[in-house]
Image 1 (tube, rainbow, N blue to C red):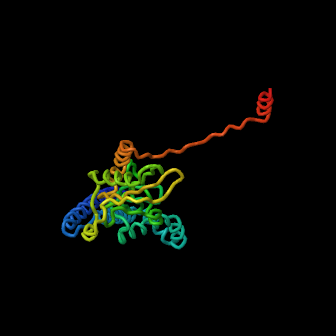
Image 2 (cartoon, rainbow, N blue to C red; image 1 turned 180 degrees about the vertical axis):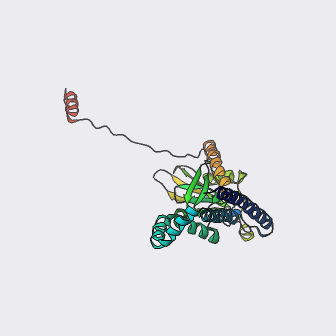
Image 3 (cartoon, one colour; image 1 turned 90 degrees about the vertical axis):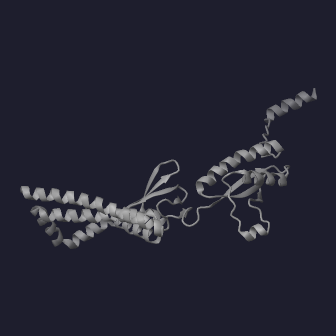
Length: 288
């Protein structure tokens, strides 16, 4: 490889780097402008950014192969045996292609977007940070990064708390003893929920006119040692709903203690059986 080829390769790499940065800047500027008018979410921008970067570097690698004679001869030899090579590459890259296709479907059909709060199965939950060609990046509520292949997340059951309406109905459930005043307990739960700043009113005008409660409290079932109550409390998003739930656990427990509503705890009855020899000795002793 002569000096001219080295210079050309360096120029191709520099050109690819510059073109990548320019394309990202143009995409970001376009979507920032359009998002104001059309409310475009950043999902498409981030995915197109990764896709444009891939195209630029594929062209750059192809150009470098063309410039270097030895690599060009090797590439032509590969194309001569293209039948076997395509089969081998197809088998080796099927997972990568599956991730790319799944990523395209995610961007087109939008089961979730960048910034949405997701729960994936029973294992993971968090906020979508990025959608790349190969994987989706989720930041958990513990600030841990969960990197999941697009083909895997497409096959999972996803609960999206942000796709259309971010409001969350939080279930606050507490069991009281059978001797406690049910009406008083329901009143306390409703009052504490209404007093919390995160509680919002989602009733329609008709529901308000009909006198429906902002916070509904019902007896949902009977346990072995408790009457189980549930309050339906609404918050504007998942984060505020969880904070509200934890605050209500404390405030309701304090009100219950203050006003004599018992939260039962399990009792255990232990029976000690004496062996036959001890029983016989006791029997003989009792006869003297």
